[in-house]
Image 1 (cartoon, rainbow, N blue to C red):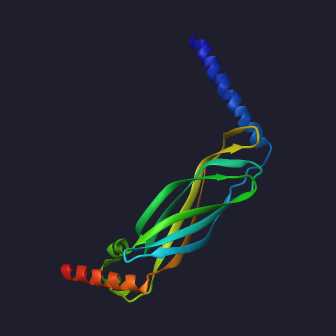
Image 2 (image 1 turned 180 degrees about the vertical axis):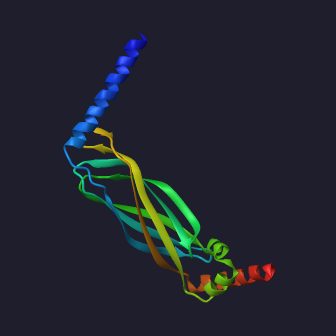
Image 3 (image 1 turned 90 degrees about the horizontal axis):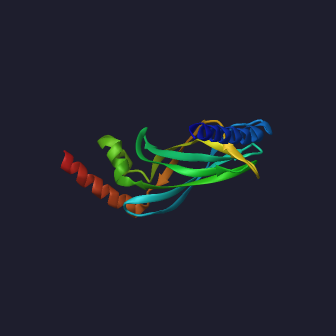
Length: 186
C-alpha cells in the first residue's frame, strides 16, 4: 500500500510539473514592472487625513501571475509611522493592474515620530511630506486558459514622497494639541 501511495504522489507531482513546463515553455517569462501612479486626497478631520495611493503593475507576459501581493510603509523624515501589506493582486496576461492602497495619516503618529524640534516646524506648515515605499512581490503561479503551475520569485519596490495637506481647522486643533503635549514634556 505504501508503494502505491508513493507512486500516486510522484505521478501527481510529475503531472503538475508538466503543466507548469507546458505553460512556461510557451513563452519567455519577463518580470512585471511596478510604478507609482497618483495620490488622491479623500478628506481630513482634526485627527487624520485619508488618502488613496494608486500603484500600477504591468505584466508583459502572455500568461497571468497569481500569488502576488503588495505591502507598503509610510514615512516622515525616514521614520516609519504606518505600514500594511498582503494586498492580494492578480496580474492578468499583457495587462496593467491598478492597485489602490488606502491610508490614514494620523497627525499624532507623525508628531510622535517627528520629535520636538520637527513638531515645532510642522506646526507652521500646511502640508506634511509623507513618503510611501511600496513593494510588489510574490512567488507567482502562472496560468493560461487551461493550466496553471508555480514559477519564480520576484520583488519590486517603488518610492515616492507626497505633500499631504493639513486642513486649516485641523492644523489649528493639532497645533493646540501639540503645544499642550510639549508643555507637559518640558
